[in-house]
Image (cartoon, rainbow, N blue to C red):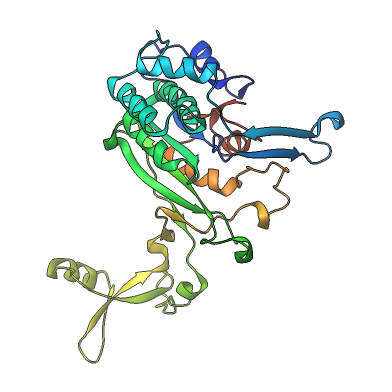
Amino acid sequence: MQNRTLYFGDNLEILREKFPDAPDGEGYFDLIYLDPPFNSSRDYNVLFKEGLVDSQAQVQAFEDSWHWTEEAQSAFEELVGVKKSKTNINEQVANLMLALEKLVGHNDVLAYLTMMTIRLIELRRVLKKTGSIYLHCDPTASHYLKIVMDAIFGKKNFHNEIVWRRGHVNVNTAGHQFPRNHDVIFFYTKSNENYYKRSFRPYSEKTMALFKYDDNDGRGKYRLQTLRTYGEETIRKMEKDNRIVTMPSGKKYFKQYLSDKEGVTVDDVWDDLSSLQGNPKEALGYPTQKPEPLLERIINASSKEGDWILDPFSGCGTTVSVAEQLNRKWVGID
């Protein structure tokens, strides 16, 4: 496997042909991020900035809708065991697809879920035992995709449903409903041995203003926090370390130094990474392009320098670009 490789073609066929079962059975990639079509039933015309592509090919159009065709029928038959498959299909996946067939019928939704399921099975195969996968989608089909991910990766390997708030919306265009303003990112792993590094966001100005004390002892600024449920032994250690302040009333507080933490721990609601509306220099004119800080957070959380990253729906290439900047090895499929 060669670093900085970009394949062009059907990612299902490329995964099967270029990445056969690894000899050690451990897979190839430490992290997979995919931002596939959302089945939004929208048509997109992509106008790239001048100079990025040939002047005769500056507009690229694609249709984000799926239909029940012979190809969809053939893939579905692979998944349910009617037709011999190149993929190892477990019984749970086959039963799920049969249940979805009864629920939604042979239509665009089942075509989309069939397309995604057969590819997610291959993505699990090429993922290392210690690897993680992030599936980016929206509420159009996220409820179905989570069930598919549970069947393929196992419920026990589900970690988060991350809500990414895309940015600000014009409430006047929302119609008879709340404005839609978020995407969903499912975080799964192949096993419980995955790598994970906690992420932090900077303190707000309001929080920073609370760190107003400084003993000039070289430890920097701190704020006073209540002791809460700390045990007596812990309090004694903190007093010995000069981290306790006793008020005239006798009430004790501990000193929380600004340097104690890198910031606020990032949880599963990401409202601090806005869309490209606020960063026109980064925008390429690709309507589904995601901001680089979003990929930076995912790559830093679930991989180390030198690890292998795969994006099987590369699009405008944000994932592989950020992977390169963060000293990761990468493969993209477009």
